[in-house]
Amino acid sequence: MNEQIVARHWLAHFTPKAAPALATSTVLILARIWNANGAEHSVGNAVLMTALSLAAATAGACASVGRAGDPVIAGTAFAASGALAFAGVAGYADGMPLPLLLWSVATAGAYGLAARYWRTDRRDRVTYERHVSDRREERAHIERVETIRGTTQVEVARTGAAYAESLAQALTARAMLPGFDPRALESAGLPELPERRDAA
Image (cartoon, rainbow, N blue to C red; front, side):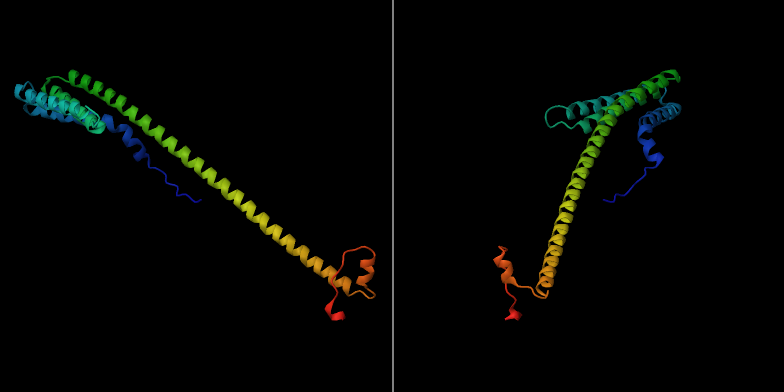
């Protein structure tokens, strides 16, 4: 089987690994821009971000309850809640140490959660590739067996045809010999040979 070989670009391989750091860094940069534009020590902005964070956490809790809960929606809601809380604190604080500490904790947490999904994805991919490889080997084995069987049948047919042709030539050559008498062979105990019609 011919397979298309697709080489992944290094950027396509690196981007998913950098996504958690890019996301938390983007939130930190936007929060500090917001801080420089009047969010520092603004109680109203802090209350707004707290309310939005609590609403997102509540949505995540509701999405994860019961049998009909969707883990993707729940995870997205909890991630949004954490991002809003992080942005609120980073926008409210007046210095960089607390926002940087929260950024490092958020980045480590994001990588911890992402590593779990990467492991699951890698396990599923390895299982799929192993399954495809096993199926390929099984089909290749069946093809080899069928090829051998077909070749054997062709060779047997050729051998039978060659034997029949050689036998016919031998019988014809023997019948053409001068002094050949089929009755003498019968009297010697050999099987009866059919008489030539043109001899009659």
